Image (tube, rainbow, N blue to C red; front, side, top):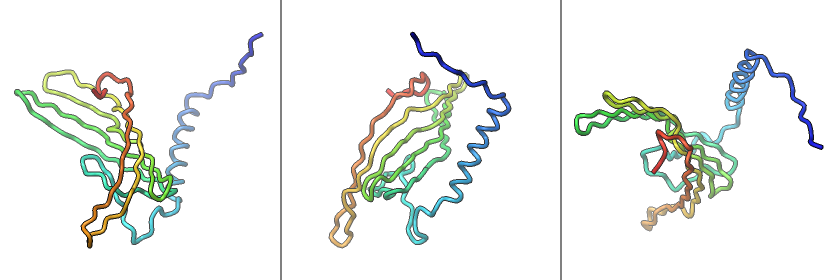
Amino acid sequence: MTPSRTSLPALPRALRRATGWTAIALAFAGLAHAPQARAADEAIVTDRPDFVESSDVVGRGRFQIETGYQSGRTSSGGLTTRTRTTPTLLRIGVGETVELRAETDGFAHQSADGQPSASGFSDWSLGAKWHMRDGDEEHGMPSIGWLLHADLDEHGKSFRAR
């Protein structure tokens, strides 16, 4: 005897769209009313793409999103290639010295003169950061943090890492 599934009636298309937009609106409303992640005098330290990552972590119970728009252009052998990405880093503090991280170049679009363009999502990298020690300028001791990342293949042909 095989178990049977009871299916619910499908929501009308307009209601499905409204439900999605309602969820997005509620998420933004929740972020607007979320408690301050840092005190007013405490600076936020970022690990944005194309910058050296700091040894600092976001701290226990804190969530930080770092994202942007990146555009680049290269020319080689008379061919100009343009690449646009949306690099994003999500940081979640699981302790005062440890954070979990998810990072991607996001949606990418690449075009070259006279060539077909390519679009797709970039691979993800999941990892953790451990802030081992604070720096001490007086004694010339640097701040030290350890990063461990695992790159995940998103199975897209256009922007798969090698």
